Image (cartoon, rainbow, N blue to C red):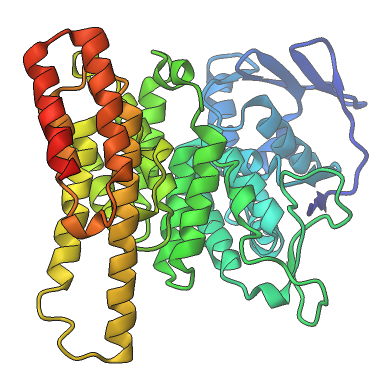
Length: 457
């Protein structure tokens, strides 16, 4: 962590109680500055020589016959003001990533510019930010996190934007040139920061930056990831890995926590932001399991149709890689049963349509590349058939599953997807048992039996 010491005189500030700060001096104080509930007993001369804002406020107070100056909207509050006041006195004050934004915003408010005094506080802080903070991975993150409480000042002073750009640039550094640790949020590591250093024998993994960024709230995370993607040097797989880590960090696993009234909107914003940040290449970057998990969350928190449509389009590219458990998506309403079988049917239809489209005259020439592609399509089709039959066996236990819905999904896969029908026989048998136990509908039971016999031929 970087530090910058300003001033040379001993710190003469003392507390006169919980809400009182005063300067120990042979000279009596002649101005009381109220920052919220905190009172500072100070001297006019050192303050007025460096702050244009205090010049105006003290002048107004003097015209009213009082020594009291009230400032209720100072960014950085009492802590930020104390740094500025100590600087005016020439006392030792230490800037760090934790207080530099508060000090910068307070100094801006107080007008501590070069016009007032050469080498004034704004200039000193800017030197520290540009020469030290933005060069350090850890410090850039700490400062970025601190900007949230100081909006809109930190935004208008471009502290937020500069930190985001610095962080995004560092994620693109060649891992071979990085001596690393999970410096921001890992404790007990020997290395205190991430630094670029060519020739190091310990090479950082490509995803060294992912975990640290999970500390950012969703608004800042979105902006950092947009900046990273805009540089065009990060692979879709790494982007996908980062988004997965962020989802694991912030999206709760339990149903109750996910849909709780106090957090529903937050979780909806989280999942929609993650979906918006997905790599543009829909067939890479994120696993099918992760995409299906996002779809499940999007359904539970009530995301819009356009969000679910985007996920379904992406999932259709790699549906054959899913597991039965991944496909157990909750139904939109209890009246539709336990699982959203119609949505799964939609996914299967999309996958089959895309696969069929690739066969339209593409394999006339039997080149090695075409044969590899053809073998892949055959393998994925077989995997899809096995997946659908396993899914049907699982959802067959739902007494509210309509027979027509069951049949539509069973027949959605192409004939080539089932070289044998053992899985389908098992699914139909399971469904017949549920029909006979729960529905007691002879017509429906008869239909199930006929369907079973049809596949038995």
